[in-house]
Amino acid sequence: MAFYGKSFVPEREENYEAFVKSMGLPEEREKQTLQFKPVQKFEKKGDDYVFTIQTPEGEKTFNFKSGVEFTSAFRDRPVRI
Image (spheres, rainbow, N blue to C red):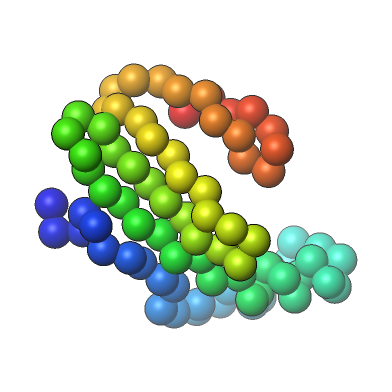
């Protein structure tokens, strides 16, 4: 596919600030959320897929196979995908 191996960054944020403000977050958290600009990359390696998110806090990588359920963590909480 044409999007494999490419890095993606947010380009537009139409109405995003109003959306974040409507969540009622504390001011510091609101500021962090508005400045958050993750770089995302999606790759295919054989039968496996690799999804990588780069943030100022570090890099998070998810490896998975199509149609196979897996467990991971999101904000230190377990999730099943």
